[in-house]
Amino acid sequence: MAKKDKDIFDRIMSAKIWGPLGPFYFKNKEVLLYLLFGGLTTVVSIASYYVAYKICGINVLIANIISWVFAVTFAYITNKIWVFDSETNNSKEVLGEIFKFYTGRLATLVVEEAIILVFDTLLHFNSMLVKLVAQIIVIVLNYVISKLFVFKKKEA
Image 1 (cartoon, rainbow, N blue to C red):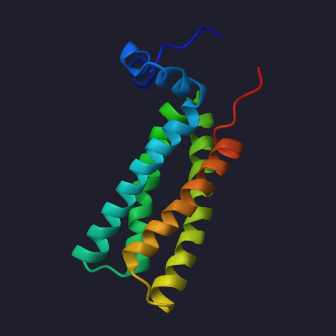
Image 2: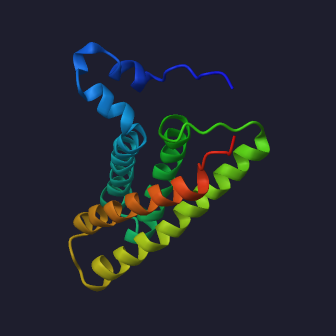
């Protein structure tokens, strides 16, 4: 199999300006990019949640589902391309990968919804703080699911 071209992050981190950070990046690339895109996914999730819940006045649980759709779509694209560098050969493989990704994310949505139901709806904690804490838990769970089940490398 031919060696893949460097992606934009590899090209940036190969610059001499980064000094000792370059080797650290290449050694920990997957986790670092997952954290970067996990953070950006959290921004997408919280921003869309805020718009749906605070601005549009949609029910807190429905607003969370809306934010989930935006965030999961963003996460799938970034995880496939940059984090796990997933290669699929045909539409059947792509659809299977998408199905596994969304199914895994659906499982963590249930966890997130339960956290919001208990701590926001029942115990009346601050909605945005509950959402943020739930996101941290979900990021960790999503990495494990993606690494072990969705984007696992094919045996050579």
